[in-house]
Length: 179
Image 1 (cartoon, helix red, strand yellow):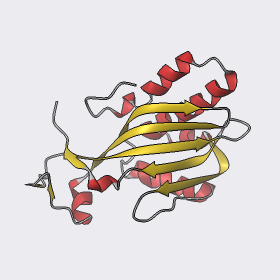
Image 2: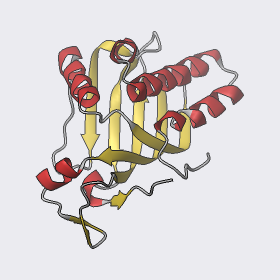
Image 3: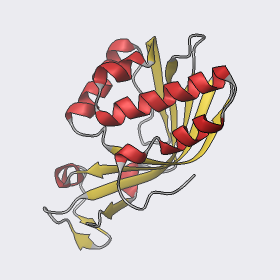
Image 4: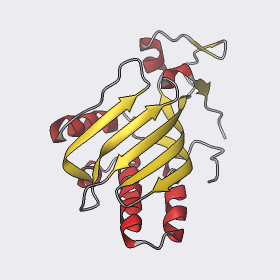
């Protein structure tokens, strides 16, 4: 998979498109397409399209964070995505390095890059990045390596996400370079 040089959320699903172009098994194509559609609708902020990719009672698990957990059930997952989209957190960039697929599961691995506001950094007690004080006019990126396990139901809808974080995202910050 190719690594992104710039922050470009709309390129996040390109590795899934590449993998789909090579897959011949109909079931595996269907589950790959569902993950691709989920990622595309999430990043674009299409709430209804995003929720349509999920089962009626999705279950999320977040591992490797200071507080592990994740939303469980349609109502909690809906609230999670509404808050994410309303706060602009859906515009992340995922550099997918590896995709593994079988009939019932897709696994994606790579580095996630998410814009983080100066206000959010200060609210987290962060006042500097790379030894420099926060710049109110700058954009900052929180980065971490993640592995996401996407289990699928018999109809090919996503049961949830099991996301394993390599480090807490705020532990790896950088200032976004203007292009």
